Amino acid sequence: MPFSIIKETGAFNVVRLVDSDSQTSAEIYSFGALLNSFNISGNGKCHNIIDGFATPQDAVDNITAGFKSARLSPFVCRITAGRYTFAGQEHAINKFFLGTEAIHGLLYDAPFTITAKGADEQHAFVTLGYDYNKLDEGYPFSFHSVITYTLEKDGKLEISTEITNTGRTEMPLTDGWHPYFSLGDNVNDWVFEMNTHEMLEFSDKLVPTGNIIEHTAFSNPAQIGDTFLDNCFVLQNNGAPACTLSNPANGLRLTILAEKNYPYLQVYTPPHRKSIAIENLSGAPDAFNNGIGLIIVKPLEKFTFATVYKIHLSR
Image (cartoon, rainbow, N blue to C red; front, side):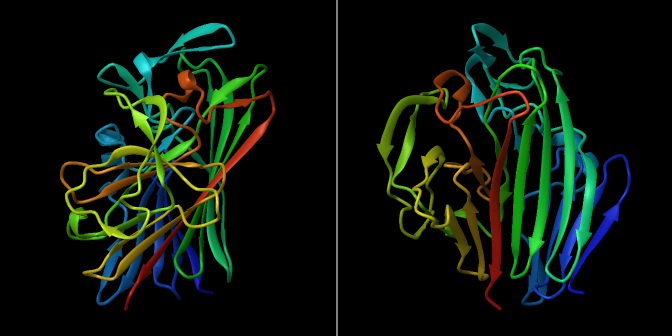
């Protein structure tokens, strides 16, 4: 059977999904339900396209230093001053701030539990769950979050998220991911293409102004060069991949496909230029205030989100 699962236990569990046929594997930490590696072997070496952590403890100690692979939920990116009003009540987030803005949600360090796993001839999967129950007084709602990673043939990894409102009132929600991808060498040498012609205009605090502006620099494949990106792009709803990223020097290529519930793509190039953050988002930064992509979830209502990473290596 080509697919298998390897599980390591400890303070936080680690699960590896393996496909021996395509020589691909994915490593998932129960800490934050984060994807720590996505590997493909070929040309005499193993290539990991995720800029991850050395160990689960490294993730615990350093998750807020870049938020690598973090879950962005129940809000994505930023909330201005950490404050928003919902159903006539003002709320103030009390978790992590970058400068004056609350960032990256409340689940990036959540202790997820492995609830199911399996492998057969077609795929290997692991499912992780976490119950959020009003832990931050700035988000006084309850919900159940289920994350499923599924490794399939030909280097395909699907990540699906299911969020159910388990409280008695409506709750605001946006959802996303914050992985950093590394294809070897330097970001400047990689070729990037996005399925977009538009991006959200940002203020100096990196939150939308409400305007949408044209951006076509990567509407067709182009070398990244010294371009700096810290922007949110509006994906075209035409069924094409959200983006592709490739390194001509070693033959690595990543394709990201997002379902309609992830209509935004946030892209960030860190100063070290060794990896690039490509973030599937259901709503815009500061959506709790500006309403762009904001979802209002009724009691017992369920929302699902999915993205697919496909890795290819020219052998």
